Length: 365
Ligand code: CA
Ligand code: CA
Ligand code: CA
Ligand code: CA
Ligand code: CA
Image (tube, rainbow, N blue to C red):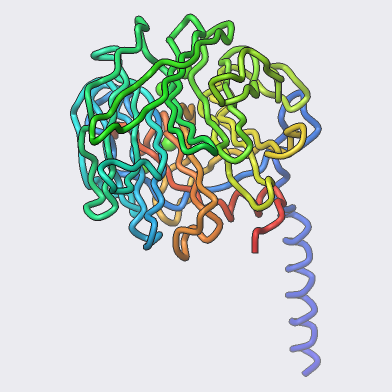
């Protein structure tokens, strides 16, 4: 009895000693920022893209109107075309239609009485906007209308906006010059037409952009300079406000790449910005003055054999629950280095709940 007690005491002492030796790992620091860097791990990854080298670039998420588990991710292979993946990351459809750099989509586009999703991609091969329709019945993309000439030497960034008035718009930037143009896309009796409605200059190279359909904000990442908030409506002009700047208090560094909006209730939610040069993501409030909240990195999920994420170009996020794995929505990010070495690039799927927990964001319930 006495011996057993001593042994128990000894084992407790050993546990306490090991507890002292194994301090919980401290979050890494971001140079120039008072907020520590948080770590999150992706849940799964897509099939690698067909092209080698820097090829995967930008994803978009389509939420199935009836069955969230049938939702899709569309990703660009910027050497080859578009790919469509399911929520397990399996490739469902490949469209080798040109060197598509960025892609985006909006639901509620009615053609001949059928409600579909309109998908747009910046095609560097033809210097056009490539348009597709996504039919919820088939979950497949079909080409829609003639490619829209951009007039740019190299169409680069692309994002879409659906206004309160029911109009669909596409924004495209020109690589290098920082010019943006905006088109309204309409279906007139089954014929899809594009009309250029606006042009503005950001100042220098800008690719990542996203429109917040509810608030009418257009967020644009000027790669070496700042994340800007413009108005998305065609009459919004050149007025803008800096959400954050390279070298600012959040520790933001160049390049700023993909940006996305997680839509919460009552105007709440989050802006996610890829800080490509630092292999991390900055998160801002969607409401008010878009206050900086914190940053996270995507580390490997070793037990699932999923590598971490670096040098993210494009990203996309939805707040819509997509089943048990993504109860608060899904974040999809491009991964610049898909391990094990020798594999082509791909996209990683992250449960938004994991991001929210790491950053201490309030749950949506
Ligand atoms: Ca890249
Ligand atoms: Ca870029
Ligand atoms: Ca990786
Ligand atoms: Ca890119
Ligand atoms: Ca991998």
